[in-house]
Image 1 (cartoon, helix red, strand yellow):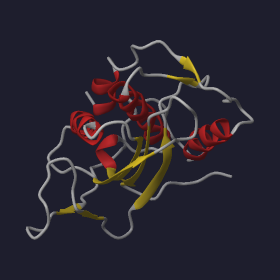
Image 2 (tube, one colour):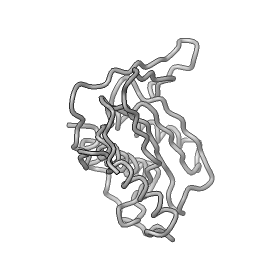
Image 3 (spheres, helix red, strand yellow):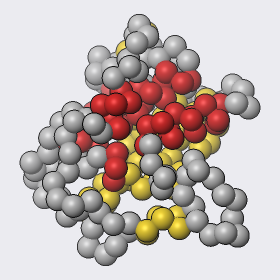
Length: 196
């Protein structure tokens, strides 16, 4: 079972809240359209978190110098071999396809954002196994927030070599009620064919 199916199965439990001002013409709608339409344009892409890449896993090198702070929540650097495709996933937020904010607290919203990240990764022909870089922006409320996010990321990726990760607490994200946004870089086994 892949991370997306395992992790996402119990995550969408809280009732949706409407994202004020969200819709196809809003900034949120445009961001979601870019996140969904961009990766889906890759030829032969599958959708859904159960989609897996074809071929052997891409060998990347995780670098964690002893001179830097040691953490099991992230890698300090990840080296991609030459000739591999890189896939950039825009910031995924905890909303449904109908622009409803999902998740009652930070932990629940991180779960939904990671579910959405899975969908975008799968549409681009890669999986959570291929993620090498994460940026997490969250609306800061308590000093515990980054620890909650780290716990969710470790449970989601469930691997020894974590992606290189940056977290930043901010005062506001795109729509009121949204507490987290996650964007990623993944590495594919072969260069994807992009259709026009």
